[in-house]
Length: 475
Length: 105
Image (cartoon, rainbow over all chains, first blue to last red; front, side, top):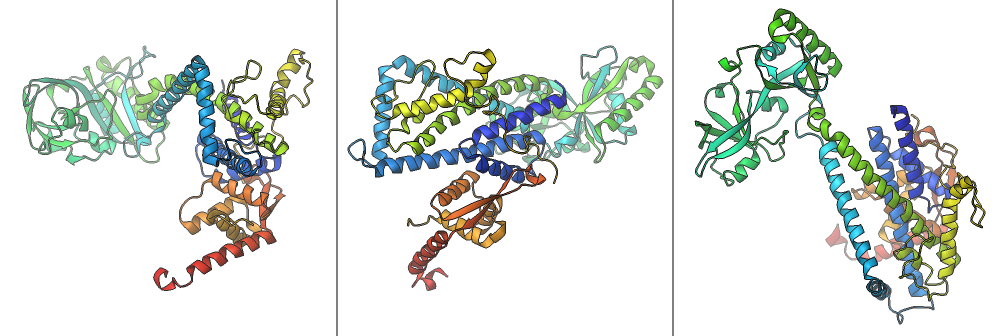
């Protein structure tokens, strides 16, 4: 799908959803409310968030409308002469309704269990997926000005699939010295530490990081301090909040205490905030000595890099500059660097890029289910105020409030068939279904004995002067 | 005539204050600025519908502009009944307020 087609599809979806949400209003009221929403959403960026904003607030207005009509219907029932339930008030009527629902559900236990399980699953899955989407895709990374953070690595020229390989420390030092588009370039490497404290040895995932790593990310210590240059070789360590809580029992005197990490005694100098996260969840950090003999050989690719883009510099500009520097390095050190180039991407892309498609797929599936719900709920809600306006019976509002199945299959058993006016509402419901299904019947040439009364597009096609109200044209 | 709720009272006052510029977003902004907390859109539109249904205010459509995607704009006006209802609400408040000036000001 091209971006233009995707954008137009999103436009259409937002238009339909918003009009569907507000369909209870008259055409003039609906268009003016949509105009109000468009006007008030001018500051919402980016465009997709604006679409979500419009639908969300349109739904809120629709819910307000329905609540108002429910209150009116309750008041009309209580004020009217045909009071049910022995003249009880609104509370009594509600209790009667609950009893009626309980009786009808008890009559069909399988139906009740199916409905309960379906609802539970739907609510649970929707909540779970949107939680994942929120934390995975929408919530900003827990770093300062995370949009400028980059992941930097090496990439083999003959290996287009692998996005990032580890880097050579000597190359990193050269890139750091020569780059003008980066504000900082720091290194890290994952490690498995054997930690010996008061209890037995524990194996913990950790990271060895260059002294400026946390400063580059813009993270502030929750307790103590982070590494500086003086910590190189000094035997210090920083704990994640989780490690402090789980491995050290939230010891308030942990700072300054010495633990043995891989047989080396290290003094704990700081604790990270609970909000800090990094891929794979390292729990213990030590300082990386960039001048260690281990890293002296240029061909040994053992470490990874993060960088911060200089303010006002574009990602593509930084990419071109680093590739140019790397080409020079390859010419100067062909043995170590031939066949390699530098890989660069936003840190957020590296952290969530791999799961983005999967999460997006889940979110789309959930959105589809919600779309079905949004489609049907207003239809059922709408049959009710309309019925109220044509009939003053206290029972007219009932069909919209009960759990209904598709009218072409069967009505719910809780539909009050004894009510003298339920047929009027049912007719109204069928009329609406006729509107919805008319295009299908017209397309298939089958009218099912009922000619569509409306134009095939009228049930969904915008009828305003400007069909596409989202995104609005600039003022 | 029923007694106005607090929000209905605020809506009528906001429309009267805004005069020719009394559209829904402006009313919402005006009330929110006065009470120093946001007013829900659903709540406001409910109140506007309710008041219009009871004949306390009317609205007329005006053509939209590109800033609102050419969608029409509803301008609200308070009717005589609305003004009377607002006066009644104020009268009730004034009556309850009387004698409490020393304690509440």
